[in-house]
Image 1 (cartoon, helix red, strand yellow):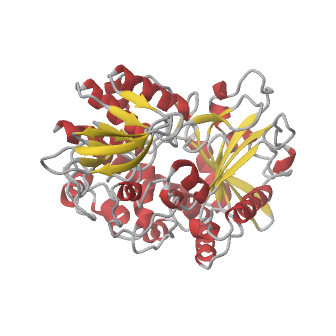
Image 2: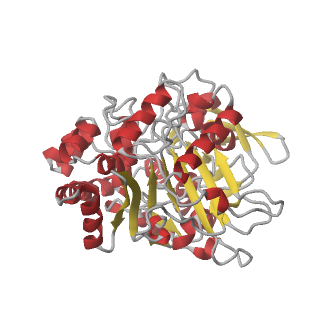
Length: 515
């Protein structure tokens, strides 16, 4: 049994298969396992371990952790989101406080002048919560048909709004306020280049995976950083008997056939080419990467494309807000939305389609260290905080001609837009490393392609699929099948893939074990 790629899904698969008594070899190109779910010291001489790529957890089932004996702490954020706004000379912010409904209702009232929008908000997220309760358990079960999942949802309105008609239809029907509509829509555009009325429903699929996690839709902070999660998964895989080899780049996969074994060619840590036979090959890399490894010409799918800018920062202190009514620790403790009203998100999409960087540049920010100081070493000053910024509507195509120049321009765009809602420039709050440089790291989609072999920088490996059978090629009983009987997908490109979930790894292992 060979697993190509030591990301978190490959480690989950290795843990299950090793415990079942199979001989498992994991081959990882980089010098460490974890893939995109790692913690690293990104700034020279600064003891701050940032979740460099992936940074929050929602879709990882507690069941997987329990079955593999993995002990990690996922800490709930009290504040869901904060969205600055300015109207008629008034400055404020929409604060969604998961621990105080009256405070949230008051924040909606201040923005909209009435009770209607908050009532619509409660009704909409009550509906998505009921869908989450019914859909999330199915993600680690054999792949249902569309009809079976629809029966499980058992709500014609929810099914129509989430699975059949563009999400914008529901948002415009349910909500009247531009800011409120935008806050909802952001979950449909994380790493997904789309718009509210996209007939492909790409935005609906992204939204669904963002609201069903854990059966609640909550997004939690991994204590110790994302590397603590994959570190524990790696320990579980080794404890189950799996062998993890790093610095080993897979260069070819011979998929074999129904009667004969597959074979994997790789370069070991010394650069020596080796080959290993396998009854099964599980690919934790993107499907497009698997196509390349087997020497294929592609499966007829559009080339994957990411659409995000990731900025990691360390601040000496949190910046002051123009909205003096909200403490910065509350504002940055959840998801801080910048230029993400409904109109701004639509305008950003149209500008990007036209080949221009969006202005204003939409982004969302969160502060890991407010929930978990353990990622900051003793040498980091007490008031220092991390910030993670995720820019939206920035497709890889914009970066193709001049990756470095466009990356710098995109960075200036998101930081300039952020400065517009602050009472002081963010640059005044940035910490510096031992060489005197600002503690700021920026990665665009093409950087993610180079760093992690994500085609087009797509963080989901390819477009997300609805979690039922019948969309695209037959992926088999567990949603992990390929055109080769001895090769399975165990990464984010599987049906029911995407995010830090372990679900594709679990499902590929179940397919191998025939459960």
